[in-house]
Length: 331
Image (cartoon, rainbow, N blue to C red; front, side):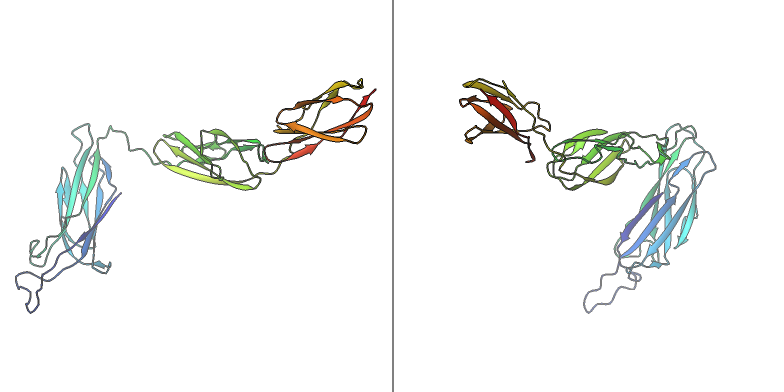
């Protein structure tokens, strides 16, 4: 369906202390004319027709009665070619003589009381087009609006600092029928993921993302099909703090001889720690702390007795865990 509304401005020019010319006709200002073709695409089978509806509007936007002249540019017949608004005419195309689509144009103009040229200012001429298709031509594609679906979020309860996987692979280029996509002529050409945390968007049917802070996020998936039509859906994903890292280590040899070097290894710790802090308490209760980003360290057991060692690990989100103390006996 084609709908066109154009303003039509016309009127007598009245100068101060002068009366309008008797030959100019009545003043008309800010009128508009709307033409509508239904349908605006026809198969040239000699049967299909299009109804051309015509409405005139006054300066206040209300429909008014006006005499309108219609002009057909192209093959076919238009009946009637003059009418009073609101009114309609019937356009009938001839049977197709070519294998290519044809476009015809229908123009409309308001007729003044003493003829079309009686108005001082020229009226714009609205026009609409009707496409004529041969019988053998394919019908125009049906507009399809995609259906975005956030299929899954893994894990279902994400943790800050951990990777979260998003899956939108069951989105449809058109509508869904039950649990599957309905038959469609289009395909999905783009998946756009807005994670709601002011970071760069993701693309693709499946994406991975890491949230830094524990809080709810409005995650929006927008899909676009090959017709250029888009739709979006939003789901709130609540990101928690998670369990954080766990400190695990070995201290060898144990037992050890006095003066031996005790090797400390925290590489068995879980949860991706980024910092390792060793607290070493000697038999004389002297406390030493050492550590850094590497999971290994060592100390010299220079006093006979029982040494106590603990390991505290911290991840990139500031979550930490301290192990139980291990005892190293030095003889």
